[in-house]
Length: 316
Image 1: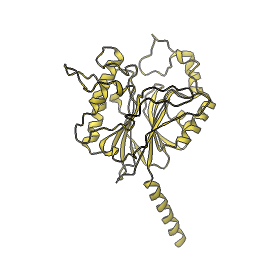
Image 2 (image 1 turned 120 degrees about the vertical axis):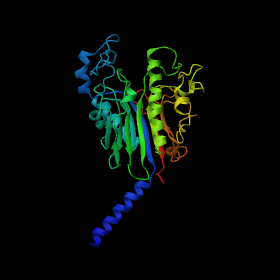
Image 3 (image 1 turned 90 degrees about the vertical axis):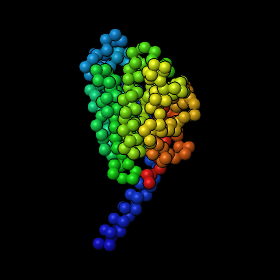
């Protein structure tokens, strides 16, 4: 009896110590990440630039073949790098679901959007870290358009450390132009902005500790200070979502002021489009100076986005 009690107390102490450790939160766009078998199955029926499929078909563009095929050796290299980063929660973009993610993050659980298409958004969550996969934020996909949904997860639900996170991969190809410039890509990104802001505002009104993380496909450094033009149309993403309304919706970008980012190994520096955006409550847990851009080791193929991470103190 005494031995069992001692063991139980030791386990409780270890759990409490683990809970007191900062949590590492990261985001990583894995660039058309698929298993070699899945890629090989889709490659013969790839589509050209003017023949994009509709209706949620599983297909890949022909300009990926064969140069974007990830090999088993590539997956093993990425897994070793992921182990070095050792993040507790990683927002993932451009991933063909849990199957291939498990090869890179074998010690994690997963919450992925359930689109049939190859590119999905999701989370890798360290095993043992309590979490709840919430319903996909499909509204971000703009019904009727082939745009990626948001992945929504609650970490450590029902505790003082609870946080709500949304992983995003917003519409590409409008990373610096005003959202009103008339191109389809910019119009679609413009339509996503109020949908994203609605999720943020709901979390703020509920008093939640929340964050929005991932690939925003937008250079915040090139955006104008005013969110809207004289006609009231949204022209800029960041000032629109960071409007401070309602209370608790003041947002923090831990990487602001970092400047251009590069991952080494031939990846030239460029201004970021990936962000770890924190709501007011969650920003209060940010470990000062913890924002990091991870360099890739020399040799081999690597994704075209860097891993960025921060550390968060335990909740009150």
